[in-house]
Length: 353
Image (cartoon, rainbow, N blue to C red; front, side):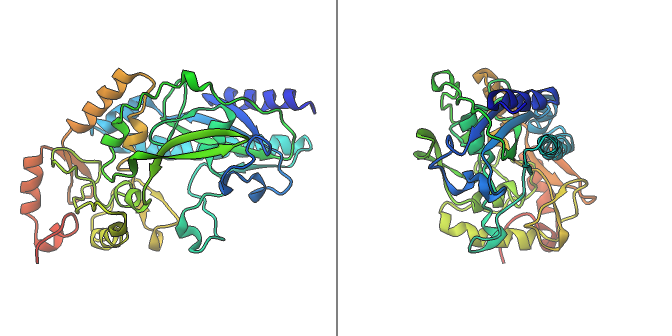
């Protein structure tokens, strides 16, 4: 099975058999000219090809998460799908290695380069799953910059296997079939304002251009998706975060806001479940509270609008003394916060001194 086309098809079939909803192949040639995070040799010297794939998240648990009926269900599904994708990548890499092709299974998430100016805290991935996915035909870039697939929209976890085998590359998906109509619900659901509404980022790989909305400071996502704050400006809905610290407008203000959010929220009761992230100090766990731009994005526009309505009509989240989270009406949340001591209240919102 040394023919590049035959071996590439086998690798795709291997992944699809085990639960992937899409898979494709990119090579050093088709990735040529791309950003540093498309350099396959960074993780495997002598690499020639990469097999990119996507595994879907559970849509029932996504709906319950967006409607604020159940945070833990989707969180557990997301965490376990990430582990499954990493394991699936390792499985294919091991198989190819046993067949004489040195290979490397790339972790699905939370692995960062250590040789950048601030090391891991620059959050530069070893390889960009997003770039590999769009070049190999796993999906397109949506307006948000998330990879959208034919069958599950952006509600997938991406994986990759880098190999020294010379696999035949697959083509990117036809741009004319891309269903993203720039409805901007991804932007409307992002309280941090991560996506620029006018400027785009264009990445060239193998002579082909791929574009998505420019992303502003990633400290924006750290602050909101990190769970430190999450109240919409109109006060009528929130993420799963019980925090309601002010969300700045300027990129330059987010570093200080993030530091304050981390420190002020530290005494909050621990939420059951969660996961460990290497950027968090003292082996502190974090929890999924957002991800809305990804979870809203479905191939059907009517479904996108329905999911956005679920999100924005489901109230705001407060935290109980036992650490559990609960969605309530905005007026009820205000009463709950007002009844707290100043020290307790400061764990969730800015308290005048």
